[in-house]
Image (cartoon, rainbow, N blue to C red; front, side, top):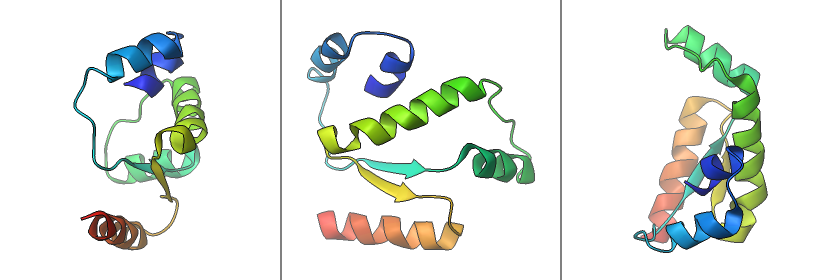
Length: 96
């Protein structure tokens, strides 16, 4: 919620106030993927690609910038899907 709110120019303090009213997640994993790789994969699978590439770039940048602040774990999702999946499972198992 915070990242998309910031991408829409809402104030961080207000978004954090709203976020504090929500149930806290135990773990947040961000799959960071290059826009071109994402587009190629979506087209390969026949999914529609979100037309607003500028917003995608802003959201990606914000996720990466805020990951340390909120303790989010960022995984390089440009790699093979199986490698990414193994990393996700490993991280989840470490947090159980």
